[in-house]
Length: 238
Image (cartoon, rainbow, N blue to C red; front, side, top):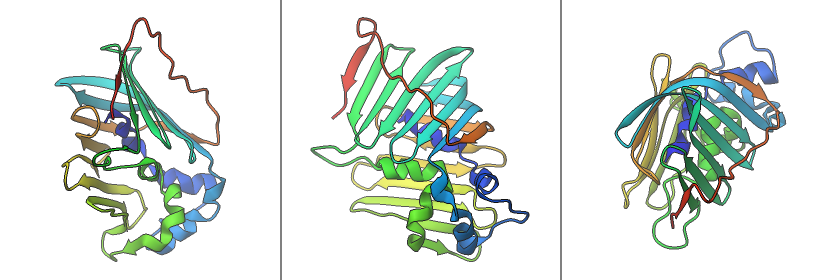
């Protein structure tokens, strides 16, 4: 599921600058509680000009990514290669849209399936990965291992859901979403100066490694997911 690439861009340490000045590193659950003070004032996050290597369908692309998240409303992604947009995607509370501009295909799927097994993630899971400010409503689930990580576990029936932040600095460290019956997954891990995501969820297997990008808060942008129906084919995923 290509929309998952948005998670690679999260460097939520910038949140401390937007909420309140901090001259020291925040540590553990106590540090996360401190960061969350005023976090409800963040209604949207825009990350632009992040560099990434995107691999799917056995092809490799160097892309520039733009991510926009409007709290509890929409998550939007655009991937551009050499000035040409190759991918555009959006997630709402009830649906996912992915526009593959290379093959002229639009994929649409309900985020909650009527029949069969559910996907390994829902809208809240995806939003939680964008920035630690979205985890502030779930502080009662935070577990401090006192060594490396602050861990959140959101397990559901047949689905393992885990998000871990670095205990010092509280940057996203790893996340794992895995469906034990379908073996569909979405996973990510921090590297030295980048973040790697890999998944076989929704459309095809993909991998992406991203770094950098500029961030701004509480901006409104115009999101367009329309295409010319004479030039694109539509695939409904149920």
